[in-house]
Image 1 (cartoon, rainbow, N blue to C red):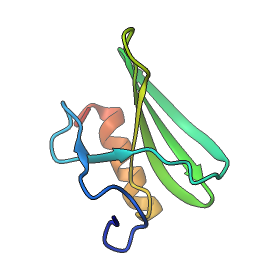
Image 2: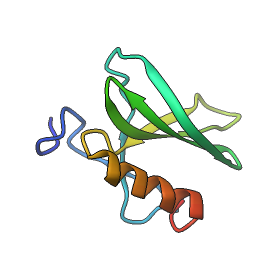
Image 3: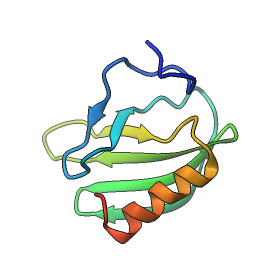
Image 4: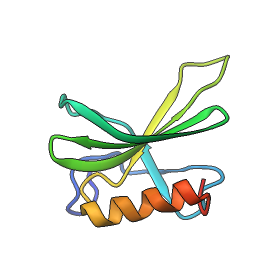
Length: 96
């Protein structure tokens, strides 16, 4: 149950609909404090660029009236530059 040298995550990633090629993993705060640097809302989906314990990541929260929100993450364990590049693609609407 690990992602190549990027920490512990489920073996099977969830590929978010509408975001081809990006594998989103169930969010795990790892018990650290989260700082949200930027956020973006599109309908019932919220994206947050975060720093947790020195690691950069992007959280995606899907809200629905019928169920508990689904919170996923991407980018944990990647460099800051990679995460910020992904964030720019989300903001520009190229993905998401």
